Length: 296
Image (tube, one colour):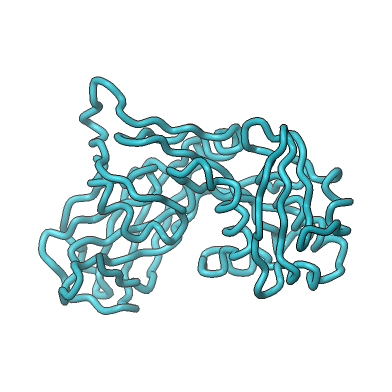
């Protein structure tokens, strides 16, 4: 596998990654004599997902967002995220935590969305080792269920504590004290559920703006993986010919089609994959998914 152009990879990263603007990605077989980019990963990221693949340019940050579990009340599931903006890491992470992963059909029924509609992060500040997060008033309408509230506090606290220098977390609502603050002391790693094997998230066809045909098809996974096998086929079972690349951060397999394809949103695409994540957890499968279409 080689890595495709980083700019192409960014198109569609909405499926999982939170990325800023960047450019250029290195071929796996053509390692540059000197690394031009740098990746800073939190200890939590390395613990749950292994080392972060390098980037060519800029300084990237790999971190974890913990989402409340729907199946195991009070527990949380870690997901990998990336950003090139160090200053906004904490606020971006909490904003995504509130938004949730509801757009991920692969995890439907497994992730809870306990934040009331309209909830926002008003401010995140740090004094010495203590981070204070101030939520909007909607958070006061959260269900009074103790397990739901503990899961939220676990998610917020563990997400923030992973960052260098953070030793304490304070939770406020509209600048005022909240009962949630009393639950922070109970938040620890025992709330984190073990990760299963990596999964296919979805398949996205990319085309030039205004074009009728798809020139690239991206198969996204839920974490960085090494792709051993990846085949995409139409509903008729005919293999879609083209070159396969691996995306930046190894989050996707990218098929650059040999010839542009006239595909429509929702078109069934058959996917065969065999992957291994950076900690050796392997998965393989054959499935049919509905194609999403995006322009760039």
